[in-house]
Image (cartoon, rainbow, N blue to C red):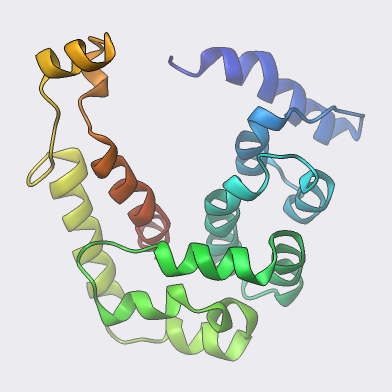
Length: 194
């Protein structure tokens, strides 16, 4: 699916409702999409935390936090709302799991809640003299693995057809590689914005 129906049928109405301050009924299955598009992240987090798919959108919220902190500076109130809405345990469990397979010391601050909770810790992290080189290394590794497919496992289309009945050529990435991608995504997102 190309996403056109989501963009035109749902997100345009959501964006319009935000622009005109009109009522919009949030749909559970699209919370991640709303969180990506909203101009009022704090308000949407507070108004959507009752939805059952809300906690699974922590990756999007964390990426939005990176975007905000990098472009507008550290804002403790944003992390306070995230922490209140998701809970410390959910955030910790998610942060422990993020990262690339190429473990490095640079990822440690991204896995620590204190980095997001404390402006001094965040600013010290950004002043790391190796930040640009680390970002370049991370993005090159991502490009080499995910985009070019080097050292990336793929599933055999005949086996996939026999096991699932699906012959979609896009679905050649096994679950293990998708899990690896989702773990790496916030780190790659952060590095893209440095």
